[in-house]
Structure formats: structure tokens, C-alpha cells
Length: 193
Image 1 (cartoon, rainbow, N blue to C red):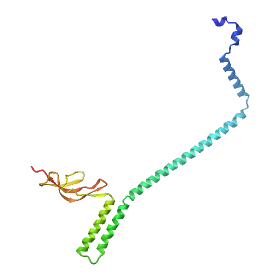
Image 2: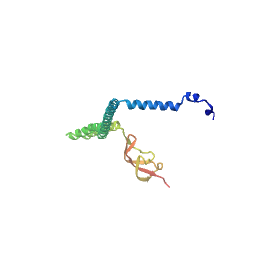
Image 3: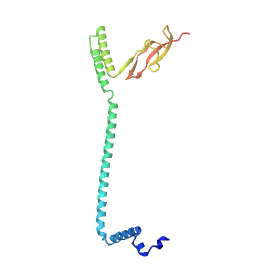
């Protein structure tokens, strides 16, 4: 009730924040109503055109990025296909020398046992060198413990050797970069009872 006790002049002189905001809003509305519509229209049209140009620019950039991504994917697939197709090219090139040596031996009219043996030894050296360059290593486990991951037991025989030892190698095995290409076929010693 103290507000009623104040004189009327003091209540009218204090600033009223609500009235001030209302007055500002009224002034803004009056200014907007008095301004011609034609003045604000070109700026909206210009803003719309600018937004459309930016949208077209971004769409173009997106299409280019998408096309580049597709090109990279396509080139990668082609490279993978070529790598798979020509993976053995170096090894095949090394084997050509072996084939040439064998053809020369067969084309010779004067074959003797000694010349045939020496030619076969040279050809085997060429083949072994090609295997080494291709990381193709031989498995010859004679006298070693039987390894089911690298050896294939054809039979088991009684032997004075320790049980599970390779007694005979029937066919050598081969590793290609530490991966078994062909297991060695072996005969294994069995435990005597």
C-alpha cells in the first residue's frame, strides 16, 4: 500500500521499462508500415539470387568430388585387377630361361649322357635361382620331427629312429613366403611297443 501513499507526480516521473519497450516496438512498426514495399523487395531478391548461386556452386563442387571419388575407386579396382593378373610376371620371366635351356637340350643332335647331365644340372640351377627369387623354398624334412602343418604322412613304419620322426621323404614340399604351397609327403617312424 505504500505505492498508493506516494504523490501522483512521483509515480508518473519514474521510468516504466515496459512502456519504453512498447514505445520502441510501436516506433519500429510505424517505420516498417511507412516504408515502401518496393525498397525491401530488391534486397530479398538479391539475397535469394546469391543463395541460389551459392547452392549451384556447392552442388557443382559436390558433383566434382563425387566424380573424383568414383575415378579413384575405378582406378584402384583396375590396379588390383592388374596386380592379380600380372602377379606372377617376374616368376614367369625367370622360368623362361629354364624353358629355353630345356628346348636347347632337346634340339641338340649330339646328346651324350655327360652333356645331358651337365645341361640338366645347369637347368636345375636356373630353376632353383628362380625359386629363390620368388621366395619359394623347399621342405625336405628327412630326420626331423613330423609336423602335420608342413608334412603329409603317407604311412607309418617301425624304425629304430625316435617315434614321429620322418624316415623317408617321398616328395619334397614347398613353402611360398612361409606359407605351405605343397606339404612334403613322408613316411614316419612309429613308436615300438
